[in-house]
Image (cartoon, rainbow, N blue to C red; front, side):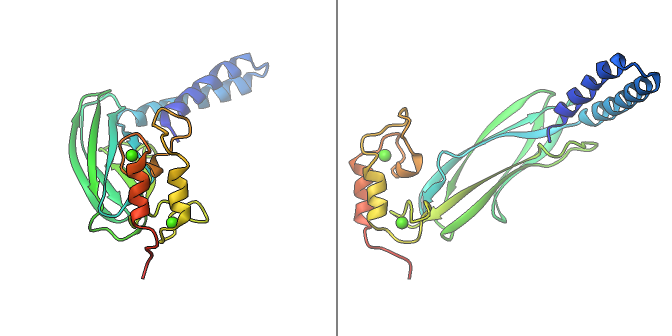
Length: 215
Ligand SMILES: [Ca+2]
Ligand SMILES: [Ca+2]
């Protein structure tokens, strides 16, 4: 829920109340709207938010590095000091203390080297710790996900890495041969050497690991 939208919703109620032919309805709706709007305004004064988390791809090979971008914003009306944390599952990967004037945004990039991470599905959690008197907490968290896979394993029968490198993986990359990031068909997960173009380097890397699997 975005708290600012609730404020707009309550204010819209006001004219609805005015046009009512029943005085008691008018009274009830306007008074309730004023009360609700007042509550929302009061609670929106202190409000920090994670306003962006961008991951370039959803599949990353173990031992590779994924750059993740974050934006945090002070959407309240007071200067705030707060903590930002980024976790993959329960592991804290990045921490930053933030100091912002009202309305300010900050961008951060974290390079996640997956070398010491087990292969598997990771829930990414970007979190702005609430400031005192903040009640709008729904915008303090953004969630995403990434799969860390074995080298060469980009897909499987269900569309996700399946632990083995076979013709399905090579075919998926080869089918996008010479597709670049500006093309609609471009899939960053198949741009395994992540440079904005799917070419022989990408196909070659996957092909070199052909036949490898878990166990
Ligand atoms: Ca596979
Ligand atoms: Ca590439």
